[in-house]
Length: 111
Image (cartoon, rainbow, N blue to C red):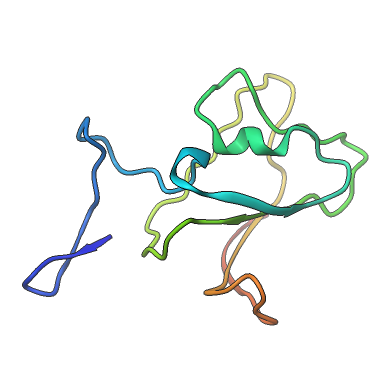
């Protein structure tokens, strides 16, 4: 989000007028941590829909910690699952102003 002179927030746009995507590697976003059975984790920060993160069904406590490259007011999180035989069962979204925070805030939960 950008601050405009009247104090209101404005949506940042790409040069193509699409919504600005902060969660891509090309903008400096990084994967800081993930569960040890996750494979190809960095693929979640790319634009290629044929490349993705993989986790075996037997993995417990699946997670990915992502750091955006700049502070922003997040209003939409997009998730996609393009695999025919897999799906999201449970999903929790936590937020923190700093990765080293001891207490992260639960923002959303889908059970």
